[in-house]
Image (cartoon, rainbow, N blue to C red; front, side, top):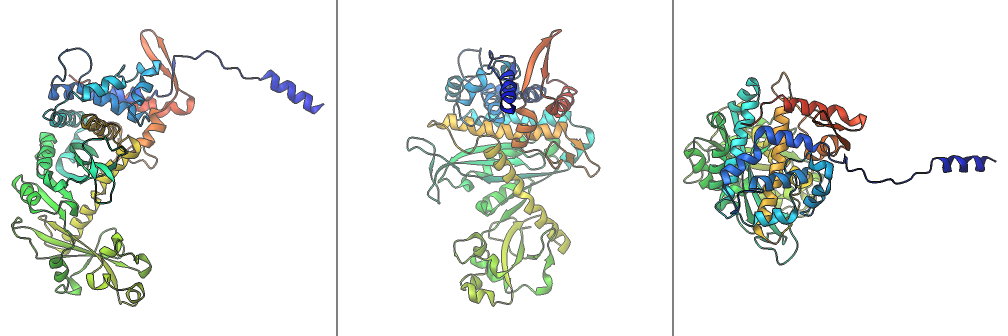
Length: 485
């Protein structure tokens, strides 16, 4: 009897699939991207800087191509065909910043951009940075203009297919392209970028990259105290001299070469000072300057005490390479018997390190250059810089810039809609009140299902109850900003 009753209930609630509802969209949060792009005039600024890329004046320019790709990546599309998937969403096209952009159109237009026009993208983004700065409250604007840090780093993007051009095998045997990127650390946005092949040394073009990054900073920001920090992959006097010529301070990671190891024997044990926020680490300063480097160059040395079980027996391991050569050659058993095991890092800088406290502060600041790694992580795991999708270098360059633009959109959104805190930082939309990564923005703000309806000449979104608050809050904050002129 019970079984029969259950069967009746199930038959009464039988589900049927109805006619598709074109007013539904899974990406209602693209309305936020569109509002931000409109307020900052991203498409118009890039198009004005780059100029025409085709004979006909109608249709999309490069600004529309890059913003359309970036919006698709923000919505979770990892491949070029994702542009067609976004285009097939009828309701979503009402909210997209660049509606109607097909894959074939984007690829065809990207291939029309010549080598001389790509640097102009940075000029357009520079205008957007200026507009973002103008829209900020005075206190936040003043904080961003006071001290400025430019981070420069490169990352390898592995590709597959022997027919792809503009890529090469790197030192690890991976076929890859190499985005070389300069970022504004305080906002985690991109200033300038090059797409190199996997076998190209980024030091060969870093001076030009730094110059373009400085040009991309808004004028009030450039007038502040600007410093550039890079890792040992850029260890070269050319960058130090170029920074000094531009009036920019520098901190450059030094390769662990023999002259630096010899310096350690002359350092008194009392000269070491505890590092900031790094247990077991100490800092000191040595009077060392490579030939032809700026006169004020000093060497900051950090050592970190290691336990024997923290050191790998593999001579190729990164941590073992930080050991003094005398300890590096020891087997694990003999290394464990040593009085102390230290890993060393070296930084060449012209910043003030005249006191132990100042040296510890500079080393702590230099350690924060991992912010550029957040840009790469966001570009690869949040956007779609985890691969280069085409055999054409121009399309891959557009794909790279779209991913970097998506990262910058997340940074601009944080600056313009975050909540100022008493300590001068911003509480954003991340899970821990920090700046939200793209993956977090995607599930909390962008990939929100909603029904799109029209009433009294307005478009109204009706999302599920649990998703309404953040979407409505961010849209309200953006709409309170002036529209781009």
